Image (tube, rainbow, N blue to C red; front, side, top):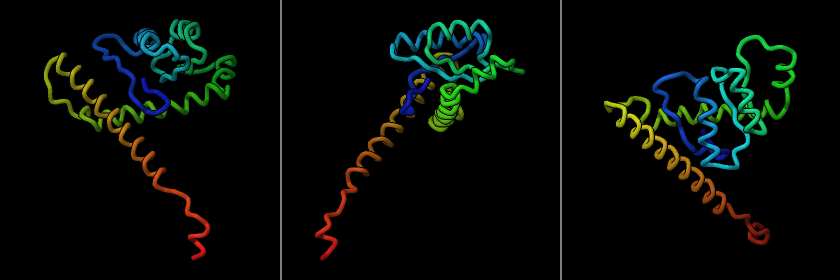
Length: 155
């Protein structure tokens, strides 16, 4: 999970089961940690009718696209501007996954479950520190760009 600023909020390592089984518990855990969470976007792999019903009950906006052929009701739901906006935000999730791969998860050289979990946590911390540095650098750059005084330009 990432927030609107690109910071990684959390991850769930799946040792058993698939994406379908992980969707609702992941949202529940994130809503406990971040009570204002009210919209999420998922891949097609997370879709099941049970997940859709449970997530619709928990969230104001559930951008969970249906696998395969869509009926008329699903097409209307997925054409909705709010749904499309959340699906566009999903590119940020893919970007965060790539960022984690660049910060130590491209090749994991540790052995064992605990070591792998520690590596994932450290990679999330490194990615968040990198994102924080980018935000601070852009803020400082914006402060340095002061508008020049019109009288100084005339001289």
